Length: 325
Image (cartoon, rainbow, N blue to C red; front, side, top):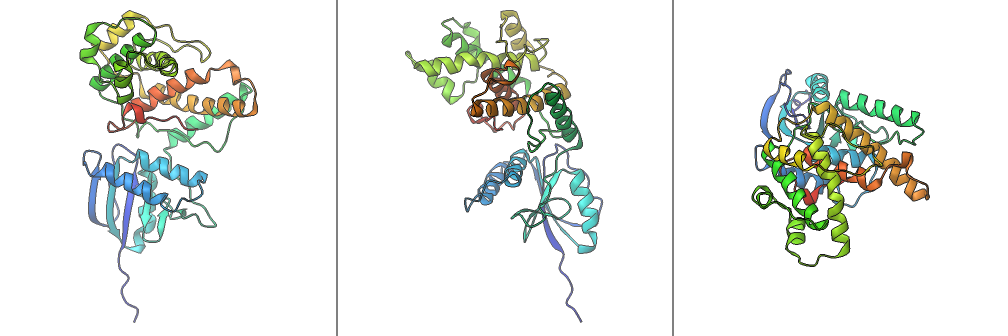
């Protein structure tokens, strides 16, 4: 007689704000979300585990790392092998990758890390995939080269904006450093409202900042305008070849009312479109070509920086935001 098969221990990592109910038979082991202070260090350790042996940075591994960065829910449970199909359907709905004893797999059980002969598919929400397809098509029609391998970005059920208080503090901080970089004076109340990053605090404290620091913080005007657009006090962003023209009344309005944030689908459309355009700009630069559609790399990068901060976890500092392609 064959020995009984032990239930399988499953660790699922979901990027959704709300975890779907587990509708299949299982035995819960543990569950936590970002309100648990232990989840962030756990995810950091998970990412370290993924790159512990300095592996080749394949598209799949990069996508897995990005997934882990976006995880909002971690759940661990035991499940019988007879329930794996039902678990798979749940994992697709949860936009989760699965950690099993033999490796990390997609919801269907196909390997992600380490990669096998059949490589799994890192899950993305359906609306994020449709957004990618729409912008790939739009850029192609404009004669702009696109990369089919670029992944989707956030889906509507993943995104969570920074709090109004954080947004107001960030707008005030940007206004302060821009004023110094451009030789202007900032109103005293900005200092009371602002939460400066480490880099910004060092810049503000330096009586003679170097030229590059001044240039960098001058370009922050594009990030500031993007946040003003996100909170709805700027009606539309300029074309990506036109620099920001900040209006003091917009700033005052945003500092008094940085809520509600513009509709999430509009913000996600900007994030996805700018991501793909930024890749095309960087590729053109590598080839020595003019940027597509005359787009400014600095404008696009600053807009992406602001929107990536707006939609990142509150534990991620302004100085830690990146704009990868």
